[in-house]
Image (cartoon, rainbow over all chains, first blue to last red; front, side, top):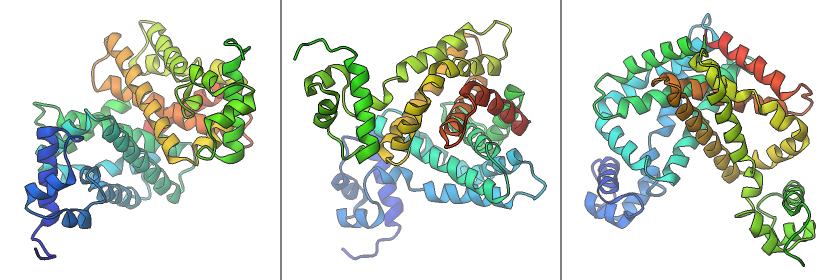
Length: 186
Length: 186
């Protein structure tokens, strides 16, 4: 088998998620994922550190999108407006991948180890947004509070978006949750 | 050595924290903790599941205090007022233990495994507050957003309270952070 496989990464991710949904995360081996994708274990490990990282493959891209959006907010934006700018690219990132996100969520939500990994991801995103707000000159505790509020909205809204039967797009739900947060905190 | 030891639990917790600060968490064994406390390993395991749980011993009490306060908020309280009632008993719980809290924080903040455990604790507290708000008739997403905002304030404020040189009491800082959150989100 050659070193280069067309879309090996995508095929491996799809095969992994299929198996996690069918058998459960803990019951799936890397050998089985590679076999399902028609690739080798070696190819798997060229793309992913372990079978858990398949589910968190987009974390860096997500963080970069959020940070870029916060940094690009107008100079006149309030701390919360700048923080909440992190939510604007979310629809573009996720709306085409709702089925994948739903299946991923169904795997993570029943596995404590994966839920922990998801919490770490959210904490890392919060810190990244707070750091970007600091660079914009926002002081503490405003920066951390705005970052926490933003990731709180992201987390709650993402769960709404993947819920069975929900058909509205992520961007619309984000805006609604943000308005609801303002109403709740007022 | 008899089965009953005066304040064995407290002596073990103190010895454990002393050793974690002196040597680091990973470099400390249960045998060393027991020896420092003048007790046996068997006594340690009668009180704690493992050396990590010494640092999270108060989690159930903390959660119960928060949930009780949310449940006891006046019927007229808004969702956020009810959620934020969870913060009111915090001063009473923690202000006498600031030195312990500072040393505990110094141990946790340099250890990824312990930071994860702390994140899980915060997520569990968030879910418990949201569940108590549901019992009060608060709908989604307001309940989850109010719970997230409250634990966000708790987390940010606790870090301020244990910061070197900070002398104000936890209750005062909680009220200040809550006001700051309202100002930020508005």
